[in-house]
Amino acid sequence: ATGEPWWKSAVVYQIYPRSFADSDGDGIGDIAGITGRLDYLARLGVDVLWLSPVYPSPHADNGYDISDYQDIDPVFGTLEDFDALLAAAHDRGMRLVMDLVVNHTSDEHPWFRESRDGGPGSAKRDWYWWRPARPGMEPGTPGAEPNNWASWFSGPAWTFDEASGEYYLHTFARKQPDLNWENPEVRQAVHAMMRWWLDRGVDGFRMDVINLISKDPALPDGRVPEGARYGDGHPFYVCGPRIHEFLAEMHREVFAGRGERLLTVGEMPGVTVEEARRFTDPARAELDMVFQFEHVGLDAGPGGKFDPRPLRLTDLKASLARWQTGLNETGWNSLYWNNHDQPRVVSRFGDDSPAHRVRSATLLATVLHLHRGTPYVYQGEELGMANAPFAAIEDFRDIESLNHHREAVTAGEDPARVMAALRARSRDNARTPMQWDAGPHAGFTTGRPWIGVNPDHTEVNAAAQLDDPESVFHHYRRLIALRHSEPAVVHGDFRLLAPEDERVYAFLRRHADSGTELLVAANFGAEPTAFPLPEGWSGARTLIANVPGDPLPPAGSLPLGPWEARVLTRR
Ligand code: TEU
Image (cartoon, rainbow, N blue to C red; front, side, top):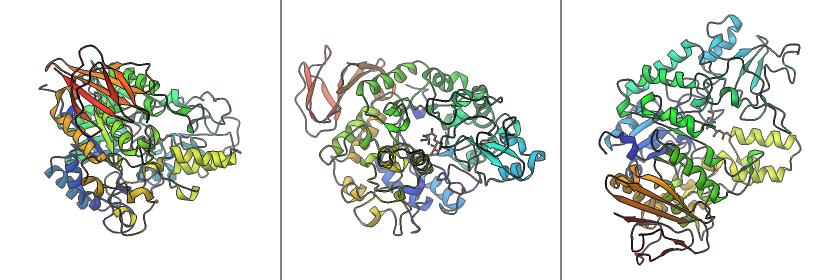
């Protein structure tokens, strides 16, 4: 439809620069490496690149701890390298979106140094959350923290500063102090920095944990879950009291007048459908879309992400369908299986054994890309890259994984179980180097990679897949092209079929303007099955499938082989 925003028919590709392509042999990916691989991304057909952080950083959390918002970390290159990448992407018709990490800075950012070293009298003291010890407690002793909140990366959310005798708040690691958005100077400084990047030519922002920036200034104690040591602060800062005000203000101050060409997406753990509709309602002018987390939490047990349990397909369907319906009239979904924080989807919701890896990866791709919303592809997902076979804790690099391992083992949990959970769920599964070819280090680097390369790169790599029309890569390429050519994929409404079916994920997309209707059916398993077609679908043509060959038009029911996914169309 005319007048629709361009990003509704776009596909975004996420690059984790540290693990994408290393041009200088230091074992860490860099910006020149990305520029050298743009033709690969153009061939895939993606419209937008999202770069995980490339700013100067001590890398306590791989760049999500920023010490200078307006420069490039030397490990990744220079501002000149960045400008060259931006120009080269634009030359190929691709836009480039930056990661905006402003819930917190690094503790090595000059703002925080001034806030801490200047003590309570510092002009920047109030840019962060400083609080005295709990009344009646000896400052710096266990339990004396200003409140009982847990950090997301284990331990308390507060760190004691000897010099001033006060604590600062950090929702994540202690090297990631939270900015105080209540202070208008903080907001103005962030807005100015964002305008600086837009003036440089970038095309928008992916906003890290942006729904956590508004905290209840009373910072009340949270409920302590059974068996837990710390309290749950979420009710006081997940979509906190002033979040909509802050995002509307950011829109006015930063995006007004140039909003049309940009893409903004807010990463929002804990966001509900109702809140997401408000954030993405165009009439409210806050964000274009958000990343919600419901579907990536369905296989977590009561103990959280490191307490894995199997996914029930009916839960996945019910969850995604609720988001589809909830944002159908107002707002817009973003669609993802993977990013740099999630295990690889082919290992998680598919089957990464040699017999089923390609088919289950292409099934998952088909299901996701046929939903209504903007799909995000995370580097290597388009190759069907799998989880890492890490053997020991020494193989891991991620601060969340390392902290969790230390805390759990110290608390007396069985180390073998802790390792099994890390192997299934660690963020490092997504962070092994991109597999370019079957050569040494998968063609990622000529040096020593900062994290182990998956040994399966001899089988699973871009070079092999580019030459194979049945590869995962070419299936992603076809799905992206389909979104660009078929309005029903972009604009059709969504209706879930057979919600109780434990094996087949099936839905309809109906596009009233063109009269086109799509039926998607996907067999989530190795056992062949058949899906009973609704009235009027016998004889329908296949638009795209993840198995080669032209089947006979289905009559009555649609046979589905192991991990087969099929999209039928009728007018
Ligand atoms: O992630 C926040 C988030 O919600 C989680 O995915 C988190 O990383 C963790 O898995 C919780 O168990 C964002 C970034 O994407 C992540 O890489 C950063 O570590 C985090 O914020 C802090 O900046």
